[in-house]
Amino acid sequence: MKKTILRWFAAFAALLGCIAPATARAQTYTTVSGTFNYSYAQNVLTLVNQQRRNAGSPAITMTAALTDAAMKRAAELAVYYSHTRPNGDNCDTGFPWNYRYAENIAEGQTSPSAVMTSWMNSSGHRSHILDPQLTLIGIGCFIRNGHYYWVQVFSDGSGSGDGRTGSKTATVNVSRTSGVDSRVTITGTPAPATGGTCTIRFSANGGTGSMANQTIAYNATAKLRKNAFTRAGFAFKGWATSPSGAVRYSDQASLKNTSSGNWGLTLYAMWQRTSFTRPTASKGTYSGYVRLTWTANSSAIYGYSVVRTPTEAFRNGVTLGSTTGRQWLDRTAQAGRRYWYWVCPIYKRTALSSGGYQISRFIPATGTKATAAQRGYRLVSVPKPTVSWGTSKTCVSVKWAASPQSWYGYRVYRGTSTAFSSATCIASVGRNVRTYTDRWAYPGRTYYYWIGVRGYNATFYASPKRTAGYRSLVVPATRVAQSGSNASLSWNSVYGAKKYRIYRGRNSKFSSASWVGTTTSTRWTDTRVSRGCRYYWWIAPVDVEGDYYWRGNSCGTLLIR
Image (cartoon, rainbow, N blue to C red):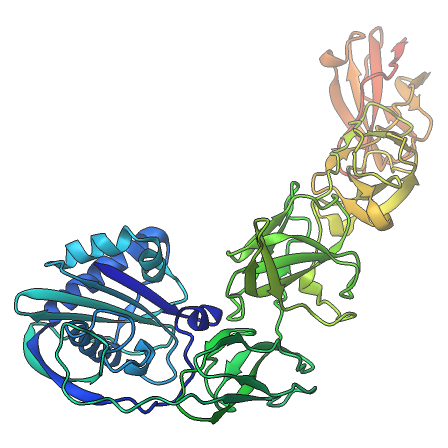
């Protein structure tokens, strides 16, 4: 047999529902003797963490305070098997004060594995065991006359581990109320109970607004009034019974008055400062999406909502979706268009009758400005150009493929090194243009060309890939005349030539010629010729990079007489 209970915001009031102080009930004590088995508690802890690890939840810590409370509750089960204590109080009165908790109970199973199997086969118990928001546990195992009683107490606090093992004989005085359990004989006459009214007062506790008092008649159940207080920059978390206490009741929680006399209760509004997260967005790193990353936010109880805005101010945002992780890939962003991103922690989630959830999230105030890290965009597809390599003596031809992200056209960049920092824009053309003729390229000099795409918002994106090209030098025709026993050569000046190399051969094939001299002039005299022989001469201009050009030139020939 097993039972479960959860006190967590609204669920607490729905399942327990009692807010009364101690009532005038006839009390007596029952002495219960048995054994506390701490080794079995450690075994259950191991099995719990195995299940949590399989479910992706963090490991839970067993503390001495919660284990002591769980052991006592297990002994109480031997008197009255219920989430209500034998004295009629809610089970939470047996746990460390101000703890939020969930409780699992069971009886009859004779081993840790057997009781864990029973709990895991129950959806309510299993949800407590696997809940990632519950971080502490106390485990009780009480054996009385060979019968086993088990308790798990969960909390969301923090504490150090309890390493106790072995067994301990225990005698527990259990406070009881008359009539709670017919299995135990109680002597004496209980005092008659008289009804009373509970008056609830609401305190804004730093907020603004007003709320009328609320009364609950004896033995009646009612919902708390809906919170009407507000506080700038804060979100309402719930109600506490002291100005700085832990939240005990959620908004509109159901409460039952079991007081025997008139009494009052003041509930204090508890606030949590609204906080949103500023993600870091990728800037042209990925072609298929914008990648967002962010650090964990403790306010994100149910994950994060991702919002995209068209400007740096928080307004006109589009909710992209929600996630429990700390990364988002925006595949709907237009390539090249700049966006600003916001991550809003989800602190509340309400199930809808139609299915799904209604979420409450922390969002920035309208007009809040984003940082540079929040701005991101997808990589624009920028083509690599095709560039002519010395095929023209008048220009360098540049061509490229169309880019689907070219909203407003292209730019052509030219540089003298492989670094884009050396480049300057030499032309801007329309989106339907795919070629450019660079007639200003200096002949013989190697240039590097990049293409820039003018994308959304008229922003330019340069291609990371460059292509080299150059304009060839003109090869001049050679004029030859005999001057005495020598040959006198002349040619026209070539734009871009720093000097000229002279080649001489005995036939009209350049491959048979030999280099015979160099000059910076456009005239040269060959004194090493013989009468009666025919010679052929070629002029090869040399560019600024030391390369010389001879293809396509016409040679000069002369028979020396």
